[in-house]
Image (cartoon, rainbow, N blue to C red; front, top):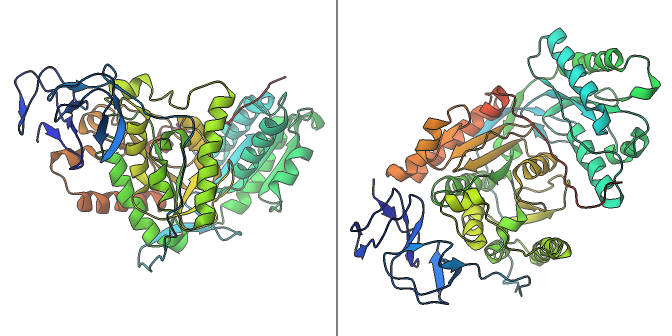
Length: 488
């Protein structure tokens, strides 16, 4: 394996693939000090105030003169982001998917969407009902012999919330009830909360009353027994559901990164980009979120929008999220995290440029609001933060049936849908075998992107056909509802 890599010919920094030390030589660049693995070093002298280039784009400005071969990180590089930017529409892009013979075995739902699991969710409308929901799910799994197929999705909200927060809680929970991977759901209410069943029903819209059942705990004698009986009545129906052959165009994948490192934009994220391009070429749907991790790279996405309407929505999404930051008196570039920095990522631009490679080069066909389900094939951009558990929940509520989650530092988190963990480096996959489903670190060992893309696509189809991801095996399945306002 080479000791370092230059990602793009325009770059003026390289990335160390292993620790480099004084006296090491990379091409014609003599290393002038210790460069930690995954960190950057200068390929040429970079004067103070000049742009540092990685991925072919600026990732910030040098805060002092940087000598060739010197470590480039937080001590001599800072963001160039500002709170506002001007954006220019550069024209339409054509999205013309082609037919494919690829298929998977999925569950065709009444609304035409296709799921890859057939679970029953027990969803409390309020945090006060959490433990009752867990007990109902536990007993249902035991008595029906279902392992963990009945899942309680607990959360702390549903009461003492105002306006938009209350609305978001209702939207989130309603979307989970009707998710394509869900055969049926029990919506469990305490009875006196703000987010009661009367409030929830309009958010559910039209629904199959045999598959989605409602229970008010304060109106019954034994909520556990009554809830258990309702889950059993749902199971009588869902056990008859069968997988059928579905075209790959019916698959919907969410993309997410967490615990990123200096290899994320070199291995796992661009590998996901290859998958995104392949699937959307076949008419499948891909969903990208983590809006703050688009800052500094958003113009690349804007240049790929299918038309002016989607471009304008993308601009509104970016500016709206920047306004969310400034409304709370926060700077837009308060990122990356300490773990990201330890892993070699210095600025938000750098993280963003690596992050958006998960979307490949595919055309952006839509922009989704928080808890809005996807409507179109191609790439949809979804409003929401980068926080891991919030963004995986948002992707789930947008009707992604599987999430490809890349990580360089390691992360056991899982959504209530298959969350396929992809490591950026082989050392992580060997250390955390109970977390990592797929190792993209092989690409650092002169691996082929085409070969790895084929292998990952096979893994995706196997998961779609029913093979469990490690988050499912470990029961690492959680949700977190976005909150922005006052709690009474």
